[in-house]
Length: 229
Image 1 (tube, helix red, strand yellow):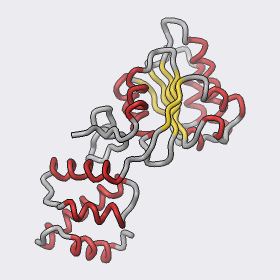
Image 2 (cartoon, one colour; image 1 turned 90 degrees about the horizontal axis):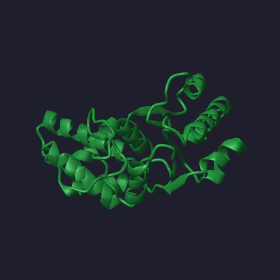
Image 3 (cartoon, one colour; image 1 turned 120 degrees about the vertical axis):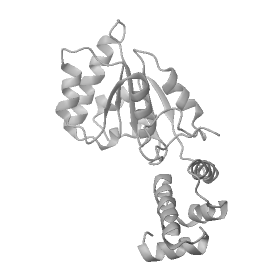
Image 4 (cartoon, helix red, strand yellow; image 1 turned 135 degrees about the vertical axis):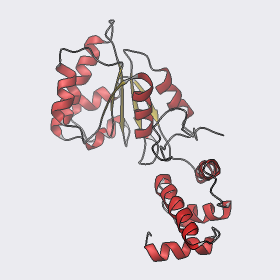
């Protein structure tokens, strides 16, 4: 089974390096795996390319803090200026969505990183956004910081990658779903594999409740009833 970058699509699964499908993102995954204390990594790519999964996998693997646009600026600022030792890794996701206060706090965090980078209290810093550093809609000093370390681009999974991932998932959960059903979903359904997996789970329950085999016509009937698309 290939490993796949993107998804914690299994129920209650925790994002990790082991539940990723690599696709074309092997280099980015290795950069995150091998990042050392005192180094920064900026990951960028469109929605669905695995930014959040990779950041969460890194924080869970190495121990650390995960921030995004839902995190308060005060929380980020306290992390950057507090008296407690820094964790092994700090991750900031969806940098392009941060408001000015959170951008300011993130800049302070970068300064804390630089201050500690050469000593025993150095930590890893991973940041992610939806575009290249110079194109980020951020204050200039913070945008400059993004490109100061390693930078890797992420690309979404291909349809073939998604098909293989979904086939593996349905096999692991003993769902009697044929490749034809999955191929129809990939052609006409959402581009987000998490949405696709949710549709497959709904279809499995729908087939059981109606005591029907899982087929493309049954899928169309379910979607028509539930108006999912």
